[in-house]
Amino acid sequence: MSEPNSSDPPPGSVNIASLSVPQLRALQTRLSSELEHLTTSHAKLRAAQLKFRDCVRSINEGVVGSAKKGTAGGPDQEILVPLTSSLYVRGKLADREKVLVDVGTGFYVEKTAPKAIEFYENKAKDLETNLTELEKIVQTKSQQQRLFEDALRQKLLAEGAASSASATAGAG
Image 1: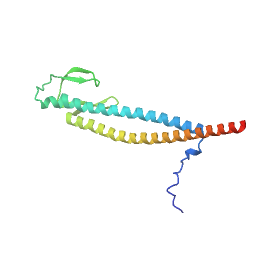
Image 2 (image 1 turned 135 degrees about the horizontal axis):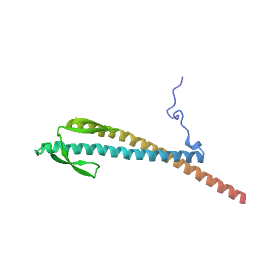
Image 3 (image 1 turned 90 degrees about the vertical axis):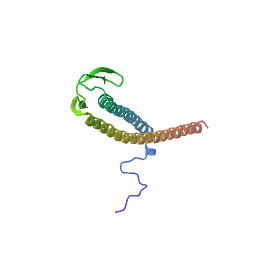
Image 4 (image 1 turned 45 degrees about the vertical axis):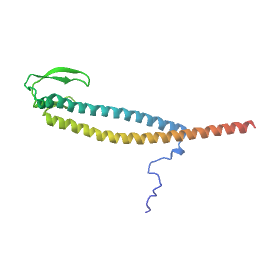
């Protein structure tokens, strides 16, 4: 049995030069929609990562930070509770030792401040890995889209040149 030649295309691949203009347009449209979806997903993952980092910052500033500053940490200590990245409300810290952590789908778990920080930092780190992989996929899809655009442009130019040559030949 012979070894496959390194210049042979992988199984299931198609030579884009052999595709028709409608096929190239269809593939280009599909790639465009995939790229749009991937870009939107990337933005959502980046926003989630920022929210996890905001959670770490909030714990550090609101719970751990006030303990380090030596402020009176009684049960009535006032803090600003973040509702969104730009909206805070006044609140009273009932227990500095424990915080509620949103672990997803509406479930909250009570954790110590250091464990909560570790949880959110791990989430942000995991998202960074996913974002890196997603960026590679987006780059690959963008390169594929450029190849399809180039092939489509060449086909359209060739068709245009062929039709103008046949029009001149018919006129003479």
